[in-house]
Image (tube, rainbow, N blue to C red):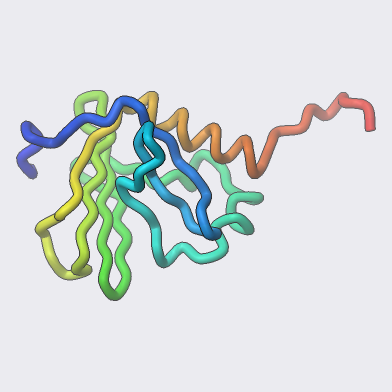
Length: 125
C-alpha cells in the first residue's frame, strides 16, 4: 500500500472541461490533475454514465497513461486518492492529493449533468 499519511486533502474541488479535455481543479481553478490523452471529452460526456467515472479501489485502482503521463485513482477510507506523474512507467508520482469521496463523486455528477442532463420523460416539448 502506498504511503497515504502525507497526501494533502483538497476539499474545494471540481472537475471542468477545458480545451475539450477533463481537468481536476481546486477552488481557485488551478489544475491538480488532468486527462491529456482524453481528446474530445465534450463529445464523450454526452454519453457518459456513472459507471464511466474514473474510480477504483486500493486493490484495483483506475489507471491510465500516455507517452509522458500516468494517473492512478482509488478510494480508501472515505477519500479518493489521485496520483499523477509524468512517466507512464514510473511508480513515483509528482502530484498527489485526495478528495472526500462524496466531493469527488459529486463533482463528476455535476459535470455529467452539465453535458448529459437527465430529461424527465413527462416534460412538455
